[in-house]
Image (cartoon, one colour):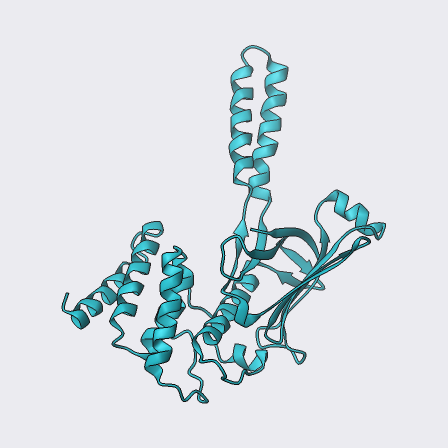
Length: 294
């Protein structure tokens, strides 16, 4: 996963879509002390992510040149966001600290020094937290994204809730793009975003509002949504599959295969969070059995 780590210098987020169509815009320098020095000397790399007008736009510029990566929404399969912590720092720090603890009996000074070093390394796990936002065009290796720490810029806090809100809205928008027939006129980013509910990850909701301009038979659109969900299910991207399968059922409530696949997704997700999705899995499995007689 290609996540470029940056120190945020400026950001803009408007869940309703700003007048110029910007949903999320983040700009920053290369993270770390070296990045800070190079940026002060105007020698560093400036990275930016802009989500606007139906496209995702990455820009990386320095003295060596400028690289621009632009991808329209209809080429993106999913957007991901979350938080990562340096887990191995915790493991390594604890191992070193334990070594220092056992060394106290033979050499107290060395033991204390090693214990402090191990504790300092382990502490970075609790003190460090990186947010990330990543976009994929299909392959698990064909991704691009940015990673950054929580920041307060001009009194506004860039935090996990903001990133997840943006990801929910983007993914809902992607569902509407990938399930509407070719030739359907696209709306502005702001209008599309405003038509979507805030969350689909942990709730069974209707994640995409119906497009009044679509005249294609809903059964056909339901099958398109089901096939997209099935594809992500086979890739073991169960959360990504949910909104597509839910959209298929919304369009065609008796779509047996969509109910069956949705039940399997909930079963897999329930393995990581026992009991959280059990009721939903049982519900859709029963509907599948009622519809198919199996």
